[in-house]
Image 1 (cartoon, rainbow, N blue to C red):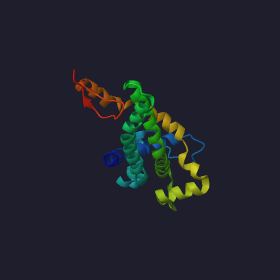
Image 2: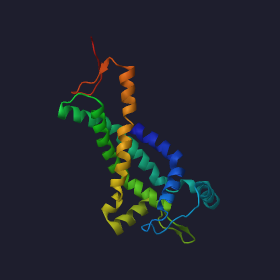
Image 3: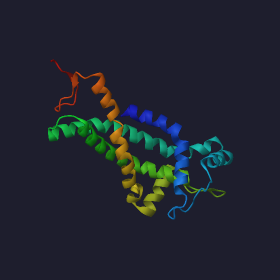
Image 4: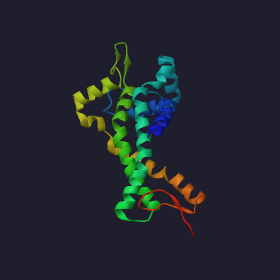
Length: 203
């Protein structure tokens, strides 16, 4: 889990500018979003952020985006094998693609629940207006407090269904690649349902 959090943090540093642009463009035209950063294209939006806020502008919301990606990566890596073992032990089915698919969907659910509050806060920090009076939120903690104050605890989980519709299939796909590689590279190794630990098969 620790290594997953570290790798997720590194990924967040690289991808934050792209997530920032995605969040702003998705808000355009929405009646629910009071402040919108309207730009004719991604290139003009990218230039405008750099011209107005400098290099730091591309990392708005990073303080919430790093925990978001770290939580998602750590939870996915730690819950996939656990979910697979639970399925194997509770159903007594043979390990196969359906087992991996079901475990991945359960892992995706855990990922979405763990990530959703950070995801919401990151999006709001990235899309908040920057005026002469200052920003709407002082930081992720201030944003969280205002959400809880005005929207309640459920406000932190807005959009969780749509997020799972996105992360469920993603989590279902990503573990299949290493599992398939194991089947091809190590065909003489099997995974018994009782422990989930690979042991060699003697023919």
